[in-house]
Length: 277
Image 1: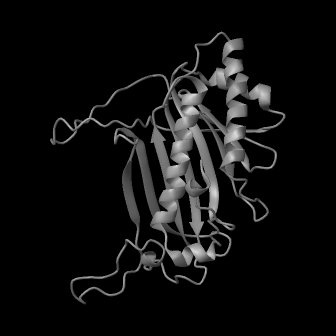
Image 2: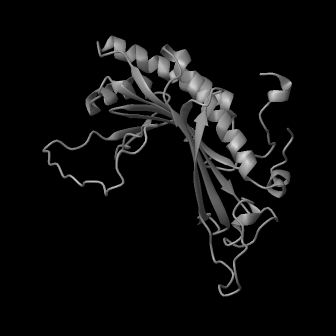
């Protein structure tokens, strides 16, 4: 990447969580195999928890075949869904997630002393733990890992910073959310949410994946300070074979998240976050 192509950068970004993950179609892990994997890394990730699994999320670009209402089907099974296993590091800031068809690494800002370590560092640790996971699969004589989707997600907590005061002023954070109305019937908006989706394409305009953006009004539990939680998720299929292909997709997703975040947010917020490039 040339200097002119450098990504926007902030000295004080509002990032509170970054998740890097892959979905795979093979192998299909059981909860017992996940527990065996945890046993190999429990010295560094001593805490374990079971939570409901995440549903599959696959980006497709085929036109809809019908506009009729979707059919609802019910199925019954005596076998409960395989849970998602959360393995938390000693500092609580790092987290590994494993379920039947997913593997991921998270960094979280849970305390003021937790400093965002930047994407390059998080990516490096994801690769490190993914390599250990793949060796575990080989040792257990399981199928080779076959990734189907790669995903990067960023969560940002946007506080007032002297730019906005009420949850109805999202336009001061996201300028495209205009407060202008056709007439003066409605009072000042109490709170606003924002949701959008963008297609990620290559230089030949072929679809690679999608960027999802959502902004919701929330409050910080410790002191009930108002904030906007902004989540950006980039997802797409691996852009090649092996680890290089999935890392290329993750890097593209990261670039779209950073550039998309900068494009959507206001210059006043950039100043509060001390933008430097």
